[in-house]
Length: 229
Ligand SMILES: NC(=O)c1ccc[n+]([C@@H]2O[C@H](COP(=O)([O-])OP(=O)(O)OC[C@H]3O[C@@H](n4cnc5c(N)ncnc54)[C@H](OP(=O)(O)O)[C@@H]3O)[C@@H](O)[C@H]2O)c1
Image 1 (cartoon, rainbow, N blue to C red):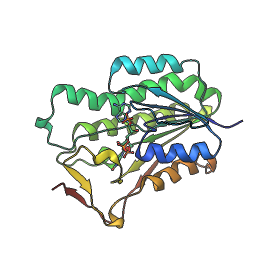
Image 2 (image 1 turned 30 degrees about the horizontal axis):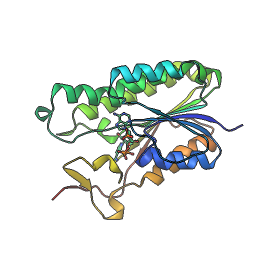
Image 3 (image 1 turned 90 degrees about the vertical axis):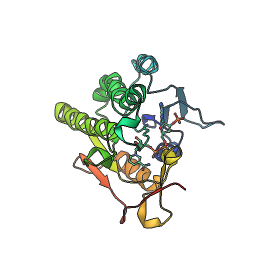
Protein backbone atom coordinates (compact mmCIF):
# COMPACT_ATOMS: atom_id res chain seq x y z
CA UNK A 1 0.00 0.00 0.00
CA UNK A 2 1.20 3.51 -0.85
CA UNK A 3 1.65 6.24 1.72
CA UNK A 4 -1.39 8.37 2.56
CA UNK A 5 -0.35 12.01 2.20
CA UNK A 6 -2.08 15.37 2.72
CA UNK A 7 -0.73 18.44 0.94
CA UNK A 8 -2.09 21.98 0.93
CA UNK A 9 -1.50 24.09 -2.17
CA UNK A 10 -1.04 21.20 -4.62
CA UNK A 11 -2.22 23.15 -7.70
CA UNK A 12 0.86 25.26 -8.42
CA UNK A 13 4.59 25.81 -7.85
CA UNK A 14 6.27 23.83 -5.08
CA UNK A 15 3.05 21.94 -4.26
CA UNK A 16 2.41 20.86 -7.84
CA UNK A 17 6.03 19.74 -8.37
CA UNK A 18 5.76 17.74 -5.13
CA UNK A 19 2.38 16.25 -6.06
CA UNK A 20 3.74 14.94 -9.38
CA UNK A 21 6.59 13.16 -7.58
CA UNK A 22 4.28 11.72 -4.90
CA UNK A 23 1.84 10.31 -7.46
CA UNK A 24 4.74 8.82 -9.46
CA UNK A 25 5.79 7.01 -6.27
CA UNK A 26 2.29 5.50 -5.90
CA UNK A 27 1.18 7.62 -2.93
CA UNK A 28 -2.48 8.33 -2.18
CA UNK A 29 -2.61 12.11 -2.01
CA UNK A 30 -5.29 14.47 -0.73
CA UNK A 31 -4.73 18.01 -2.03
CA UNK A 32 -6.37 21.11 -0.57
CA UNK A 33 -6.49 24.35 -2.59
CA UNK A 34 -9.02 26.83 -4.01
CA UNK A 35 -8.69 25.43 -7.53
CA UNK A 36 -8.94 21.85 -8.74
CA UNK A 37 -6.51 20.25 -11.17
CA UNK A 38 -8.29 19.04 -14.31
CA UNK A 39 -8.16 15.51 -15.67
CA UNK A 40 -7.90 12.15 -13.98
CA UNK A 41 -4.91 11.94 -11.70
CA UNK A 42 -4.78 8.42 -10.27
CA UNK A 43 -4.24 8.53 -6.52
CA UNK A 44 -5.33 12.15 -6.06
CA UNK A 45 -8.37 13.31 -4.07
CA UNK A 46 -8.99 17.06 -4.20
CA UNK A 47 -10.71 19.26 -1.62
CA UNK A 48 -11.55 22.78 -2.75
CA UNK A 49 -11.23 25.33 0.04
CA UNK A 50 -10.06 28.87 0.65
CA UNK A 51 -7.63 28.46 3.54
CA UNK A 52 -7.78 32.16 4.33
CA UNK A 53 -11.47 31.71 5.19
CA UNK A 54 -12.15 30.45 8.72
CA UNK A 55 -15.37 28.64 7.73
CA UNK A 56 -13.60 26.76 4.92
CA UNK A 57 -10.73 25.84 7.24
CA UNK A 58 -13.15 24.36 9.78
CA UNK A 59 -15.00 22.47 7.04
CA UNK A 60 -11.74 20.88 5.85
CA UNK A 61 -10.67 20.04 9.41
CA UNK A 62 -14.00 18.31 10.04
CA UNK A 63 -13.79 16.37 6.79
CA UNK A 64 -10.28 15.11 7.74
CA UNK A 65 -11.14 14.18 11.31
CA UNK A 66 -11.36 10.43 10.58
CA UNK A 67 -8.45 10.30 8.11
CA UNK A 68 -5.02 8.91 8.99
CA UNK A 69 -2.07 10.38 7.12
CA UNK A 70 1.51 9.14 7.06
CA UNK A 71 2.71 12.57 5.91
CA UNK A 72 1.19 16.04 6.10
CA UNK A 73 2.76 18.71 3.87
CA UNK A 74 1.71 22.21 4.91
CA UNK A 75 2.55 24.21 1.80
CA UNK A 76 -0.17 26.65 0.67
CA UNK A 77 0.87 30.27 1.06
CA UNK A 78 0.46 33.75 -0.35
CA UNK A 79 1.71 37.28 0.20
CA UNK A 80 1.57 40.72 -1.34
CA UNK A 81 4.89 42.47 -0.88
CA UNK A 82 4.20 46.03 0.29
CA UNK A 83 4.67 48.30 3.32
CA UNK A 84 2.54 47.61 6.43
CA UNK A 85 0.29 50.67 6.01
CA UNK A 86 -0.74 49.53 2.51
CA UNK A 87 -2.68 46.50 3.82
CA UNK A 88 -6.34 46.58 4.82
CA UNK A 89 -7.23 44.86 8.11
CA UNK A 90 -9.02 42.19 6.04
CA UNK A 91 -5.88 41.47 3.98
CA UNK A 92 -3.86 41.15 7.19
CA UNK A 93 -6.34 38.63 8.58
CA UNK A 94 -6.35 36.64 5.33
CA UNK A 95 -2.55 36.47 5.24
CA UNK A 96 -2.24 35.42 8.87
CA UNK A 97 -5.03 32.83 8.52
CA UNK A 98 -3.60 31.26 5.36
CA UNK A 99 0.06 31.26 6.37
CA UNK A 100 -0.37 30.35 10.03
CA UNK A 101 -3.80 29.65 11.55
CA UNK A 102 -5.20 27.36 8.84
CA UNK A 103 -2.11 25.16 8.96
CA UNK A 104 -2.13 25.05 12.76
CA UNK A 105 -5.77 23.85 12.59
CA UNK A 106 -5.11 21.33 9.78
CA UNK A 107 -2.18 19.91 11.69
CA UNK A 108 -4.30 19.60 14.84
CA UNK A 109 -7.01 17.77 12.87
CA UNK A 110 -4.44 15.30 11.47
CA UNK A 111 -2.48 14.80 14.70
CA UNK A 112 -4.18 11.62 16.06
CA UNK A 113 -3.66 9.79 12.75
CA UNK A 114 -0.08 11.08 12.39
CA UNK A 115 0.84 9.91 15.90
CA UNK A 116 -0.85 6.58 15.33
CA UNK A 117 1.21 6.05 12.16
CA UNK A 118 4.46 7.55 13.55
CA UNK A 119 4.21 10.00 10.68
CA UNK A 120 5.93 13.13 9.37
CA UNK A 121 5.04 16.77 9.06
CA UNK A 122 6.79 18.92 6.46
CA UNK A 123 6.00 22.64 6.50
CA UNK A 124 7.06 25.12 3.84
CA UNK A 125 8.17 28.22 5.68
CA UNK A 126 10.06 31.19 4.28
CA UNK A 127 13.27 33.11 4.87
CA UNK A 128 10.86 36.03 5.42
CA UNK A 129 10.14 34.33 8.74
CA UNK A 130 13.84 34.38 9.68
CA UNK A 131 14.76 37.94 8.71
CA UNK A 132 13.56 41.26 10.08
CA UNK A 133 13.53 43.49 6.99
CA UNK A 134 11.50 46.45 5.75
CA UNK A 135 8.34 45.32 3.87
CA UNK A 136 8.64 41.89 5.43
CA UNK A 137 5.75 42.29 7.82
CA UNK A 138 2.55 40.23 8.29
CA UNK A 139 3.64 37.36 6.02
CA UNK A 140 7.09 37.20 7.64
CA UNK A 141 5.55 37.23 11.11
CA UNK A 142 3.08 34.47 10.13
CA UNK A 143 5.90 32.33 8.75
CA UNK A 144 8.03 32.97 11.89
CA UNK A 145 5.10 31.75 13.98
CA UNK A 146 4.70 28.76 11.67
CA UNK A 147 8.38 27.78 12.08
CA UNK A 148 7.99 28.14 15.84
CA UNK A 149 4.85 25.98 15.91
CA UNK A 150 6.54 23.20 13.94
CA UNK A 151 9.60 23.27 16.23
CA UNK A 152 7.25 23.09 19.18
CA UNK A 153 5.32 20.14 17.68
CA UNK A 154 8.57 18.22 17.29
CA UNK A 155 9.56 18.92 20.88
CA UNK A 156 6.10 17.89 22.10
CA UNK A 157 5.83 14.63 20.15
CA UNK A 158 9.39 13.49 19.37
CA UNK A 159 9.10 10.69 21.96
CA UNK A 160 6.05 9.45 20.03
CA UNK A 161 8.20 9.30 16.88
CA UNK A 162 6.61 12.24 15.04
CA UNK A 163 9.14 13.72 12.58
CA UNK A 164 8.76 17.43 11.84
CA UNK A 165 10.75 19.52 9.35
CA UNK A 166 10.41 23.12 8.21
CA UNK A 167 11.75 23.71 4.71
CA UNK A 168 12.63 27.38 4.51
CA UNK A 169 13.13 28.64 0.94
CA UNK A 170 14.41 31.96 -0.28
CA UNK A 171 13.20 33.18 -3.72
CA UNK A 172 11.66 30.40 -5.81
CA UNK A 173 10.38 31.00 -9.36
CA UNK A 174 6.69 30.15 -9.01
CA UNK A 175 3.30 31.82 -9.43
CA UNK A 176 3.85 33.32 -5.96
CA UNK A 177 4.98 36.50 -7.75
CA UNK A 178 2.13 36.58 -10.29
CA UNK A 179 0.18 39.30 -8.46
CA UNK A 180 3.16 41.13 -6.95
CA UNK A 181 5.00 44.30 -7.88
CA UNK A 182 8.20 42.19 -7.77
CA UNK A 183 9.46 39.07 -9.55
CA UNK A 184 12.54 36.85 -9.49
CA UNK A 185 15.36 37.72 -11.90
CA UNK A 186 15.85 35.46 -14.93
CA UNK A 187 19.46 34.67 -13.95
CA UNK A 188 19.42 30.98 -12.95
CA UNK A 189 21.64 31.45 -9.89
CA UNK A 190 19.18 33.94 -8.33
CA UNK A 191 16.26 31.64 -7.63
CA UNK A 192 15.44 28.11 -6.50
CA UNK A 193 13.25 25.98 -8.76
CA UNK A 194 10.08 24.39 -7.35
CA UNK A 195 11.44 21.06 -8.59
CA UNK A 196 14.56 21.43 -6.39
CA UNK A 197 12.36 22.05 -3.33
CA UNK A 198 10.08 19.13 -4.29
CA UNK A 199 13.17 16.88 -4.45
CA UNK A 200 14.05 17.82 -0.87
CA UNK A 201 10.47 17.16 0.27
CA UNK A 202 10.26 13.76 -1.41
CA UNK A 203 13.77 12.86 -0.18
CA UNK A 204 12.57 13.42 3.41
CA UNK A 205 9.57 11.15 2.75
CA UNK A 206 11.07 8.29 0.76
CA UNK A 207 14.68 8.31 2.00
CA UNK A 208 14.42 9.80 5.49
CA UNK A 209 17.78 10.37 7.19
CA UNK A 210 18.40 8.72 10.56
CA UNK A 211 18.23 12.16 12.23
CA UNK A 212 15.39 14.70 11.95
CA UNK A 213 16.38 17.87 10.06
CA UNK A 214 14.36 20.43 12.04
CA UNK A 215 14.89 23.24 9.54
CA UNK A 216 16.30 23.17 6.01
CA UNK A 217 17.09 26.64 4.69
CA UNK A 218 17.41 26.78 0.87
CA UNK A 219 19.02 29.84 -0.74
CA UNK A 220 20.08 30.61 -4.31
CA UNK A 221 23.72 31.63 -4.74
CA UNK A 222 22.77 35.30 -5.39
CA UNK A 223 19.86 37.39 -4.21
CA UNK A 224 17.78 39.32 -6.76
CA UNK A 225 14.15 40.40 -6.77
CA UNK A 226 13.22 42.87 -9.48
CA UNK A 227 10.43 45.45 -9.52
CA UNK A 228 8.12 44.64 -12.44
CA UNK A 229 8.15 47.13 -15.31
N1 LIG B 1 8.02 31.38 -4.29
C1 LIG B 1 8.81 31.86 -3.35
O1 LIG B 1 9.72 32.68 -3.58
C2 LIG B 1 8.66 31.38 -1.93
C3 LIG B 1 9.69 31.68 -1.03
C4 LIG B 1 9.57 31.24 0.27
C5 LIG B 1 8.48 30.50 0.66
N2 LIG B 1 7.49 30.23 -0.22
C6 LIG B 1 6.34 29.44 0.25
O2 LIG B 1 6.20 28.29 -0.57
C7 LIG B 1 4.85 27.83 -0.47
C8 LIG B 1 4.35 27.48 -1.88
O3 LIG B 1 4.31 28.65 -2.66
P1 LIG B 1 4.73 28.67 -4.19
O4 LIG B 1 5.97 29.47 -4.30
O5 LIG B 1 4.72 27.31 -4.75
O6 LIG B 1 3.56 29.59 -4.77
P2 LIG B 1 2.38 29.31 -5.83
O7 LIG B 1 2.92 28.76 -7.08
O8 LIG B 1 1.62 30.59 -5.85
O9 LIG B 1 1.49 28.18 -5.11
C9 LIG B 1 0.73 28.46 -3.98
C10 LIG B 1 -0.23 27.31 -3.68
O10 LIG B 1 -0.99 27.67 -2.50
C11 LIG B 1 -2.38 27.61 -2.82
N3 LIG B 1 -3.11 28.69 -2.16
C12 LIG B 1 -2.83 30.03 -2.22
N4 LIG B 1 -3.77 30.72 -1.55
C13 LIG B 1 -4.64 29.80 -1.07
C14 LIG B 1 -5.84 29.89 -0.32
N5 LIG B 1 -6.33 31.08 0.08
N6 LIG B 1 -6.48 28.76 0.02
C15 LIG B 1 -6.02 27.55 -0.39
N7 LIG B 1 -4.89 27.39 -1.10
C16 LIG B 1 -4.22 28.50 -1.45
C17 LIG B 1 -2.46 27.78 -4.34
O11 LIG B 1 -3.61 27.10 -4.84
P3 LIG B 1 -4.93 27.83 -5.38
O12 LIG B 1 -4.51 29.08 -6.09
O13 LIG B 1 -5.55 26.78 -6.26
O14 LIG B 1 -5.74 28.09 -4.16
C18 LIG B 1 -1.20 27.07 -4.81
O15 LIG B 1 -1.45 25.69 -4.98
C19 LIG B 1 4.06 28.94 0.22
O16 LIG B 1 3.84 28.60 1.56
C20 LIG B 1 4.99 30.14 0.13
O17 LIG B 1 4.76 31.03 1.22
C21 LIG B 1 7.56 30.64 -1.52
